[in-house]
Length: 140
Figure 1 (spheres, rainbow, N blue to C red):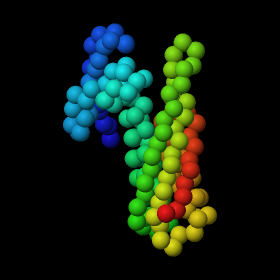
Figure 2: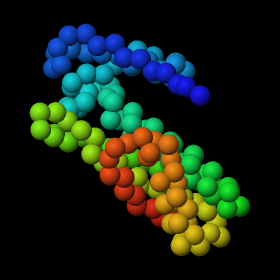
Figure 3: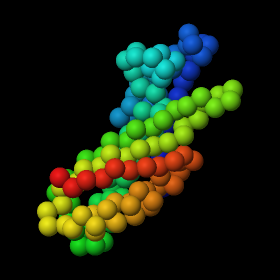
Figure 4: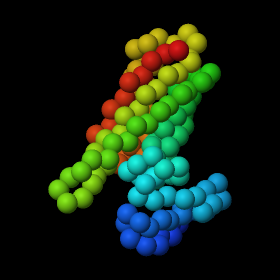
């Protein structure tokens, strides 16, 4: 299974601009720039997209692991916060923090935390990231 996305960039780093397009078409020439990445201009940026991918991947992995334990989640809400930090002459994604709230009627908190930890470790995007991955998880 392979998925594609593409980027087009024109101009210098600070003055230039670009667009991102996904193979599915959900993003189609979506703008990104220095200002959308490091300032507050409207548009997306690579780290925001990694955060979305991590949140979505974790939620699906958690649903799978819950299902394997015979638990059907009522709701899983995940927010990923990706940290981009200056390192030497460049930047690096150094961390991704998952905030998870799950509605799982009748599930013991210890079981919940154990399964959430397995999902955090097993999520393909977690495995992809060369960064510290932390999580705060709570039952709703």
